[in-house]
Image 1 (cartoon, rainbow, N blue to C red):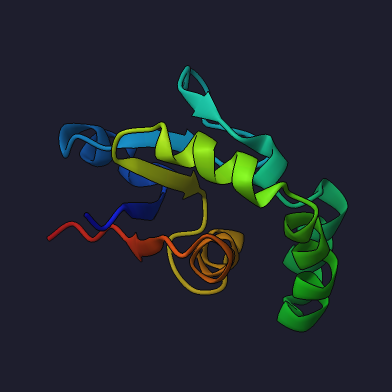
Image 2: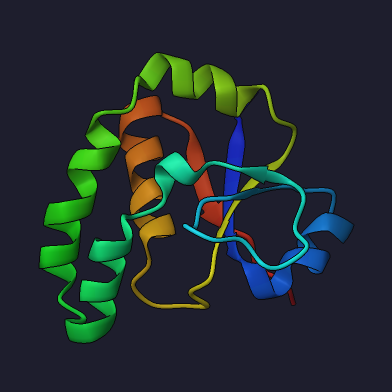
Amino acid sequence: MCYLVYTGYWARLNDYIRAGLTPIGISGKSPEGYKGLEWKFLAPSLQTYLKWKENHNEFEYMAEYMPKLEKIDKEEFKKKLLAIKNPILLCYEKEGFCHRHLVADWIEWNLFIKVDEFLID
């Protein structure tokens, strides 16, 4: 059986819930009133995020953010992820460059779990 993890953005939260997915916030801050799972250890630091918002330098962002992912215990993280039914990792960016896509790539490369952006027609 192939295990699949999804990514998405906060504005579609209710759509994801209706689709039977389990939201996991990976942004530094979740929307007001959100009471679900939050894995802030996957969020970029505020400094990294603010610098990117100012200059949109993707290479600089990755140089600061990727070492954070490399410090994660891969086996422990995999167990935690596999314990959740239909997980979807959420942040705020609707499209384009975003740390959730870096997380998705890291999961695929390191844990050999397929990660797709959840698309809603």
